[in-house]
Image 1: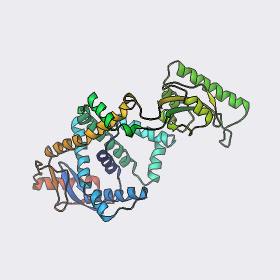
Image 2 (image 1 turned 180 degrees about the vertical axis):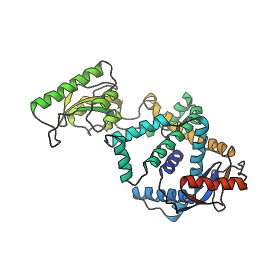
Image 3 (image 1 turned 90 degrees about the vertical axis):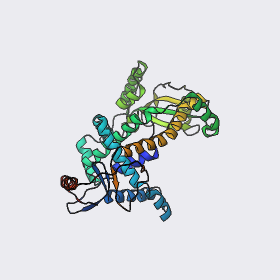
Image 4 (image 1 turned 90 degrees about the horizontal axis):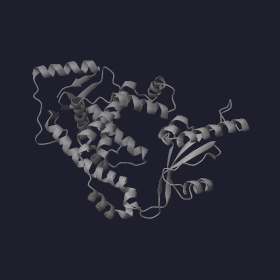
Length: 365
């Protein structure tokens, strides 16, 4: 799956910024996007998120830097609403993907059930339904972008060749291998430590040999890792990432750097147990041939084209919707061809009904 650009990351961050409100909280509406609203509280939460992210990176934003980053926050919230509304029009629900994503989160956190995941969310001060909705919104907005924008982007071969020639130096690097690991650890004692008696070691080795036999018969290495590996990267198919020469132990380096991409090692004894290694990629030192870095080039060109294409698409969605911004606030993605909603007594009455369902009070402008 292609990486999403900064705009989409901001949208996702806005979606995941969730909080609970008491009945007495008064929320001021600052924008209407067709039938949906954006409140001042939502905008404030996203401003706070900018500060929190800067602190996590150990950076301090000046007033000028903060103002520069704040100017597009309302635009991004409107983008979010437009994409979610479009998902409804396209019949995109993300139901199956939400279940898979939640289960992946559960596995990554090494939890036994969804109930435990819900408890973990509660312990971090999150409402689980809000958390699920945040995941759903993130998934469906990405699906809309992929379907409506990404699918129309083409990258002809001459563009790839031109990009490679202009950016050759950027691809220069040391020799390194990308490897995946499948670890079979010995059984553990009552204290949770791996047993070191010969019987336990023999059993672990026999299991590893059996798994290797399955791989040689055609089972995908990543599937085998997910099913059998005791290593920390099991759920990622065992992928350990890239290693330069000198970063692995001498024994493992001698094995892996002499393997071809796609090749699988024999069972290897380590301190943790018995491992099977697979070389996913072997990069030579210097500037690699174009074919070797073509996927990276396609990714870079795709992202270059996606950002302006997405902005054009979001502008069109604005023009097909009814958007009204409260005086004093600015949508930096606004189109001069947008239409404001016509507010009537009936529509105002309906707006007062909607907050009751959400147990919030709104100030209508």
